[in-house]
Length: 207
Length: 254
Image 1 (cartoon, each protein chain N blue to C red):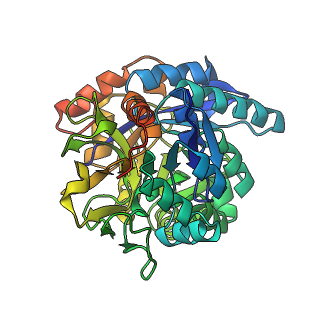
Image 2: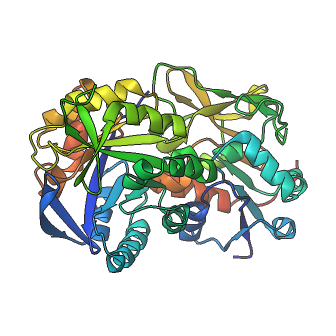
């Protein structure tokens, strides 16, 4: 295959399981924190666990904000996972005063529930629109979550899936070739691998 | 929906799957990667490998077992046993494990939890707490370390609250009194901890019947159940366990 999948390593948690899952799907994967490798990539994956503020600081410090914005603006298939989804938005309750990438309008909120936080474990996806990432999936497939915060988009048209955890929250977003998932496809068995395969099959499509 | 998890636990020694009773009387049961693959395919929600090897030689065989297990499964893997430093944690996560479980080292240097949570994220830091009944403790349960051989004089519920504050993402309390007996989880201890913290708690030690799994969730308020003997000896399949829980109205992934 002529593509190069770049998994951005910016010091925010372990990226190995993402790398391994993509490799299992047959992708040529490179884990890197170099801006020019992101520019060279055909597909960009932004994983991440940890705090919103730390993630933005690390992206800034490593001069990765512009390359990430460019990749999205160029219509390269882009996948934000977990914190990598959250930083696509404008701000987060987790880190007051820190600006996110602002690729999507809206903010990130903390769960307020009598249930356990973090929301940890398997839960279902309720699809809200046609989305190439979820092509060939059954009804409400199970995927694996670990998170205390969730995204609250201001524009409903980017919402691709909802999940119920003491009320519905947005578990996947899609706009053009830019996708974000709150769950971990790399830990979600066959369903997760199918999502990654679907992602790898996409080609760039400028907005 | 708060889906509850069934998590087979693979105790390993020198890279081999073993199981004991009350932390002693070990029996060897085979290859952890092979068992892990079978459980993953059979619907286990996650897997845990707890290494009880104390030697350096044994550590190498553990890392090899972790590597082979990660390659053979597609659900999150937690690895524990002998983890003392940030480098130990990084080494395990770099092999593709999703989480690490820290026990003795967390008691000896609580700042390890804080540093690990900062560096790798709370989500991948599990703190395991081995407990034993003790009338001297306010909660009635004492924290034990070094594979259950050393009492600490610390109250298990107070310690659970402390590890949550330090940034642990999950707590795995194991009752030494119940472990391997198949006489049921320690319900009072598990509930005392689950009710004292907001983070998820995995009931561990003592499952022998399907009813025990149900009790752990409904009576002890556990978010997940760890299973070892009940699964390894083939008493029930993972599917049977989950179907039973579902039939009792507990949300599980089937």
